[in-house]
Figure 1 (cartoon, rainbow, N blue to C red):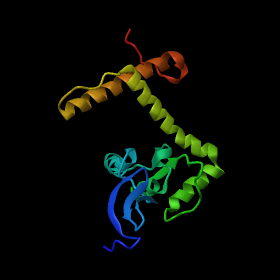
Figure 2: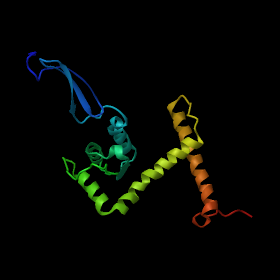
Figure 3: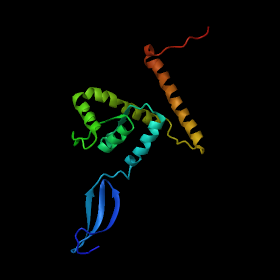
Length: 186
């Protein structure tokens, strides 16, 4: 590379926080310059494609995916569409209606604008799921310490069943008209 060339790049670092940092050798001084690129190598969003694949393998008739604001972007929308589902995520405050190759993005944002109550009714499933996760962590704070993976799965299923049983018992007393009392042998 020619050192006099201002576009000569000596090295490129990893992608972090959506920016790609490159080290340039300019005639005056070495500089660090950020370039905005689409990067999903770090954080929770990096696992999203694998999680979506596993989810569609386990639930092939999946039609709706509900996510928080982390997933309110076009790459997430594109990934969800590729698995045949529709994304419901609250758009960020700076979101636009521009398609940028993802037509379902426009559908989602228009649905939020034109029918906010219907959109939020569907989005409410996320809050229900988060409430259940919070209740499970509060009631059973001790992590599962089983070694084999099948035992971990059994222990996790047992925790969920105990939670469901507890909730159905609460319903019996809090809303007796919605639950059926089994017949008892006399």
